[in-house]
Length: 402
Image (cartoon, rainbow, N blue to C red; front, side, top):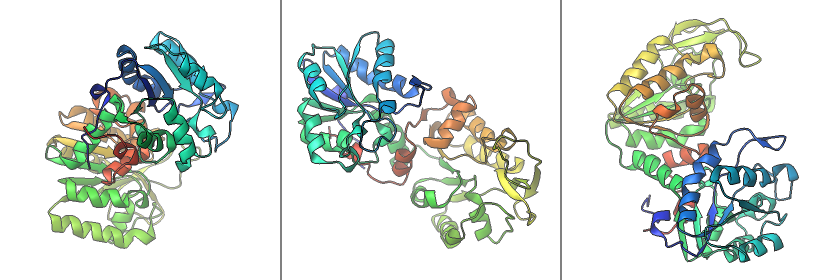
């Protein structure tokens, strides 16, 4: 994977029109932004371009308008909040077709160091199909393209891949650079011992990740709902726990592969079990701990047990690089969050480089208050998974090499 990409530090942006693709896909409630992490994460790149004297044109998608203007998914509230965060006006170009009369006039009138924001790129049906006409319209606004949206890097859309091919200079922003440095280097060139921890509900979501990480890591730890298919593959009774019957042979292959490659594959040795799944998800539950080979037929495993917590935490202690994707149990329920908390705590206490691959593990680490103790928390769930699979991400590949 070519990770040596031009970044915002390698471009001459002064006096140039720079189109910067950000990830402003923030949650909105009645027109108010309820979580502005993504806006804050984009500020370093935007501030750098302003300081360099660029004419900064920001763009992003928001939600799934499915190719038509939906007022409730307008980026207008983002422009307003960005103006406050930057301490200078971010002009909003309110064009239902994104690159319309408003946007063109606003860009035409820009002075160096000014900022405008285009409307939601997914108002255009071509965006998600990488249609050439819309890519050309975006490219017509700028001299340089900067992609700082890792959350969509695994998709080839107009605003991150199509436009990059039509400009002379395409670079990555600071946020993308950080993701490439941490995730890319962890997988391709880790400081060893390298421990990978996978959780979450389904084996099917992580097939290629398991396969790829077994080749790269020294120890692979498997928890969460997906562990029970592995336990069943070893011949254990798993009661009413989650299982993917069609993946049992795959799990057997992976257990054999680990052995053949001399890698440690750690599975839960005990489980916290319940009678029936909590409804609502945070309802009180009666739990009982059973060894993995002594699970009753009428109970379901919903978290790793105390012995497993110790084994997993121990494996992290001697590591130099740790990548974690997916919770160890039903962490949304306080009673069934102990395993996820134990792993988060082990990562918080180690000196190793700790990388959290987006999605639920990022949410869990932040909710549990361990966010600031991690080296890197990825901003992209799907994108970080594909990175861990060893796939080339179109949004990264589209940037110019140094």
